[in-house]
Image 1 (cartoon, helix red, strand yellow):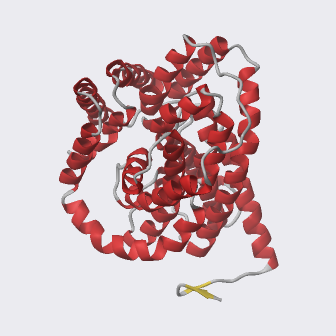
Image 2 (cartoon, one colour):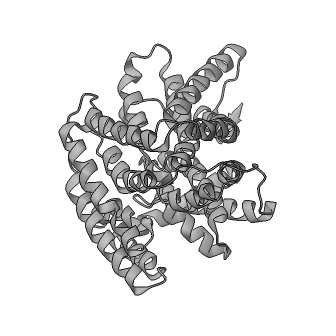
Image 3 (cartoon, one colour):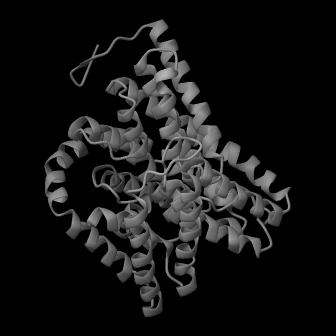
Length: 408
């Protein structure tokens, strides 16, 4: 059978082996996605390092790695909402999502995230969007500094007060300087990943939320899971987010949260629920479009695909797309099923002890992945992460930790 000019062989034995490999990846991604502060790029680097020692055909190892990354990207919304320690892709959703949680609508937020994933839209539009991006991408890369500068100005202009804009500028300068210093580092930790993103994002987006949570009353009881918005109000921002996901896949450094903001601007929608739906669409589409971008442009634009290339795994597009699709469907189902139980578990524990335990976990993870340098970066990033809420600005400005080094 031919698929897009690629010869595909389908047999019972090969199918069973592929399903087993993808299922293993889904299991790994589920476990890692529920660990607060564990960066999906860190998971990918660990899997890439272990790939040569894994028994089995390399193309199945690649399918498992990709499935793990996709599942992680779905499940990490659970600790983001329940504990406030996000992966970069979900980082700026912490505030809109937490508003729903504090209003007792956390279970609803989980279902909105699953419904807004936009899996089908991403697959349908993958080929035509890639065709367009293949021709537009060189122009964007040639003027990347201007593009990044325009993004930062746009985000600052959307603040509602001059105080918030001033705080946003300070956050951009501080996080951008932190990124310029930290990203070139290759520190050695107990686990040889040299990953500085884990402590950076845990400090910028996770620790400040945890410090605020320590002073609070804990996660309130969550109401019924019924989605209050109409199907259209969830699907429309989800589809728009899927389209905006192309920007995340083809333009390096543009976060899912930034793409979600543009998606909401395009659809003229607003509100916490719309943002969660749009961001979920962005994150799912990002995985699909980034895979197409790898084949079309030859450049990996996500941490999982960077690890995939580093492990020198074979590029088998039909198998990889199938693994992404299966992992996305399973991930969307697992989000509400596992998330409801996660909320109950969090409520059963004293919130201050839990907050301290998670903070200690962040320190341990930073030390494991980047040694003493990682712990120092965690502390510095936490101080920078406290800037936006102090001025009433949005946390999205902290994404300058990636944008500024790219612009320079």
